[in-house]
Amino acid sequence: MGRERVDVIVIGGGPGGYTAALDLARRGKSVLLLERDELGGTCLNRGCVPTKALIDAAQAFAAARGGTDGTVICEGVRFDARRAHERAAEVVGTLRAGVARLLADNGVQVLDHSPARVVAADDDGGTVASGGELLRARDVVIATGCVPQTLPVPGAMLPGVLSSDDVLAGAAASASSIAIVGGGVIGVEMAHAFSLTGRSVTVVEALDRVLPTFDREVSQRVAAQLKRQGVIVHVKARVSAMAGAPGSMELAFTDRSDSEQLCRAAVILVATGRRPATGEIFAPSVAPRLERGWLVCDGDGRTSLPHLWALGDVRVGTPQLAHVAQAQGRNVAAAICGQPPVVDEGTVPACVYLSPEVASVGLDVATARARGLDVVSSKRPTGGNARCAIAGGGPGYVRLCVERSSRRLVGAQLVCPRATDLVAELTLAVRLGLSVDELARTIHPHPTLSEMVMGAATDLCAVRPARAGD
Image 1 (cartoon, rainbow, N blue to C red):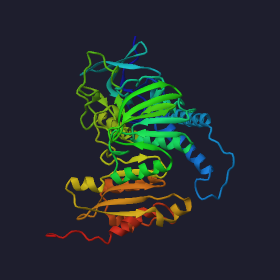
Image 2 (cartoon, helix red, strand yellow):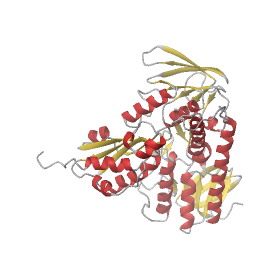
Image 3 (spheres, rainbow, N blue to C red):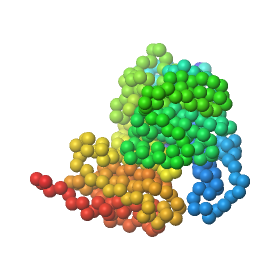
Image 4 (cartoon, one colour):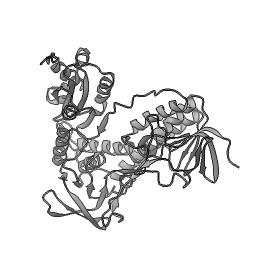
């Protein structure tokens, strides 16, 4: 005997899944949320939150060792990696309990530690098998996210080869050195945290620069900062094999000059991307359209099957970001209820938590010009900012990219302290199509880092719009 039919079953309790469940419940729908592991998904349990907690601990350690202006001197300071992981777990536990409480307060039924499989999706609705029960709903939402992918090279499955999930669970807490395959966001954030705590770090990236999805100057700045922290960075490198045991691993690769190299480290972290978690989610008789495992959806999140929806990382073409999944969760909930989207998914900020931080939104100059836009830009360095000087934030900048004729902001790139907070103002400006003049006219408090935004905007006020015929 199955449970009573509900309006919506949401499979996956990550940021997108629990956001969709909350919005649906608040709209009067009966909702059942199934999570195979812990509420919060990858972001809360094995991604964004524990990573940032470890980075915060590493930065505090570096500061205690006299990493700023030398006014605070601590002798005999040491980094307790085990305690740092315990602290991260405490933060995760607190936030997870908050999510559970929020769902309960809004009437969402939750079955955690409950793997699920869609066994029917047709005009009558959806049927999901979980925990020995058949669960029925009018609509089913897939929010199962992604899992780390492995490298197709010899030795990739050895015990000393770790995923980011493993590292955040503490598998590398006692490692004296680490080789990181992949120079994307996960790779550089891990390199940053490990190097700040005195560990030997090597990054091996297949493309020609770290953070290849960001502006080239951002990549150059980040690579330079990592090298100042003692990180060895190899780009245009091809990994050929892994060997050894935990504590004594070897990573073989070909460098940019086609020379064979061998990196020795206690552990190897593979951070080369993630794949969609759709492998076991559908019965053979349920076959929605997929592209390399990702679900193909329309703009509202509908799959190719009736009453079956998808959101977040599992959806083809979606940036693998928690805030994007949350936006899609709200929009899918609205679509199920026959309403238009409630969040604009077209303007998405991206952040990297380093020292200094990195953030970007919209177009950079090269991309804008490649798309045929006539743009001008202004870069305001951190050196003239009082708050940055006080904090000893180091070199960085805020760059604005503006369409010349309309003077509207089309993009921004930031390399500076608290860039991940500053980018929110610029995301709003890009989304609303605000002119650079509006930013310049807005008073920003002093002394704050936000003055760099106003300063860069003011610099552009001297740039006249193009006239017809120019």
